[in-house]
Amino acid sequence: MGSLFPILIFMMAGILIMTSLSGRKERKKHAALMAGIGKKDKVRAAGGIIGTIIEIKNDEVLIETDKASNTRIRVARGSITTIISSKSKPEKTNDESQSSESAETPELVESK
Image 1: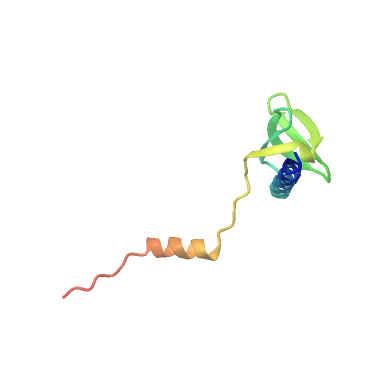
Image 2: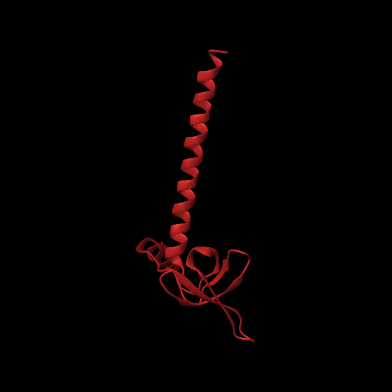
């Protein structure tokens, strides 16, 4: 019984460390999601609400769920769980633009 107790304590500490690290990873992922939302993005909020962002304030987001009836819902910014589609265009980096240019230019073949 005496040798089993330290092993049990060691395993409990390992489990606590693993869960705290995974929680930190999830918080970082959600913070990146919150930084990436913008107007006209189609999003899913907690509870399954799907709509298009119309207005963003400090901690609130106005979502239009139905254009025909002009239904709009104000939700907490933190309740956004997923960006379904984004209307903002990602910028090309220099590496991507150079690789696409080189792929489009034909190679010259020397003739004898």
